[in-house]
Image (cartoon, rainbow, N blue to C red; front, side, top):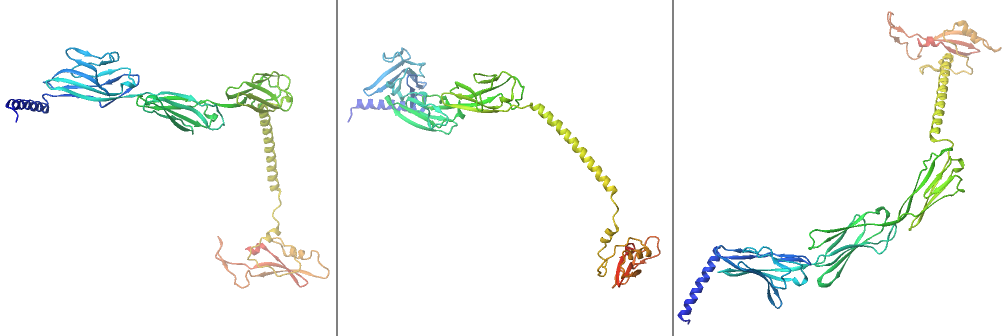
Length: 479
């Protein structure tokens, strides 16, 4: 059992501890240190270690300090005392300082951070009468990558095989950088990682593509992302595709005619690398006299002649290949404007002649129609209505009798070319229109008394040796 004096001291300390606990619970007498859990520092740059001090109204800040934890133990790197000021050890005095020391701020700044600065740092605050309060943060060092783009090992030649266009490199990054290519080409990327010293990593991304001249001058973009970078790092790379000359001949417009002056042809070439060789030749014969070649231009120093017609060739070469372009020249007798005028005049003349010819044909047709004879009676006989009953068969038929003939005329017709052994005579007889039906009544005509009876058909009968020839009086037939 403890002595009474010790029991008295124990009770007194217990009361003090309980009092302090109650004060801290009620918030009247307390302190707090706030620091970030982790801080990332970039190699070679400055890092800020935040420490915010919250002291109760009944507490007094006596001192704030920073300690670094090492395998051998903790060492003090910075001290602030409201009465005596700041204190920095010699090994940190040139690159560590308080940002704005006060009873509420114990933030320090560490310059030119290196790998040796990696570790755990603790911010401590001493108050009266509460004592010490602390909080720790972990410092890690990030290594910002060194980024650059290198061209492929071989030149890009139009139509060649797939090759490495360019390589984007993020060198010695900690942690490894994220590297990619942005492009609208149909290429592919290959990623390679290489470990370096101090835990750094180099990332290389190659872009592989089959070159084509149509994208000459376009650009790829290397994009690098890393925690040490405030934003994405972007590097453009312009494509350089080499190709043989693409030749265009200008100057010949298809309207070269005899006597035309001041004409020329120029050979233009689009090539990479640029063309360094130009030559004009004529394929079908020798180059005519009065023609001069200056660089890529073929000049005619005289008026054009007919023998200037022919096939001319322009040859262009660069370091990739030799190409040529042929032009067929045709020297006309007249210019296009003169030929167009001649065609217009000829067309006008032909149109006038054709119009005159059609007019004459039209007039002839009209005059011929007016002079045409009236329709013959025999044609009308042929167009009898189908209700007419055909006459009895006979071996020979006399010519038709015109409308309104008299009996004497019929008798004369019967005597035309009479045969000596036959006698002819003409009789007039009536026959009903339909042998099996009685005569029908027709409506009365205007101005008459009443309906009229259909008259029988009137026929002239020519008797010749017992064979009757029937002649129809059409006018009486239709009445």
